[in-house]
Length: 116
Image (cartoon, rainbow, N blue to C red; front, side, top):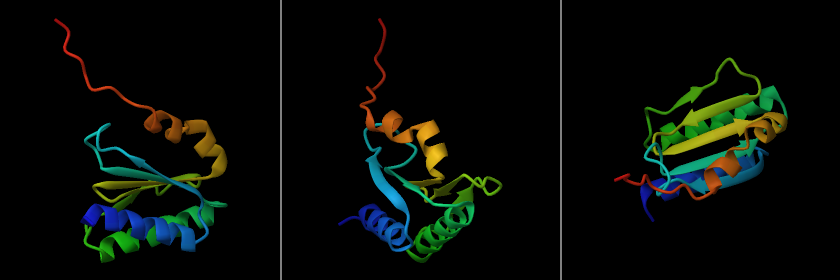
């Protein structure tokens, strides 16, 4: 196993143990250079979302990603944990449905075509 796959499993396990809902993983390797994986999960309340994001951040830092950070600190409905090669979105269910990231990123995104 490579390090990013191990981190992905650690993050998913952390989310699951802390009662995150509807956890999914999207492989971004052939879709974007911003990260290798995106993990999306839902929390049940603003406090739950905050707690999940802090737990994930702690696990990333303990497992070799010291530059990890939380984006959306002022939001009560969404947090993004930037784990460099692993991006974790934690949403309130209504916000998650509104943004539909699973639909956007799960669809095949063709590489740029050169116009001649």
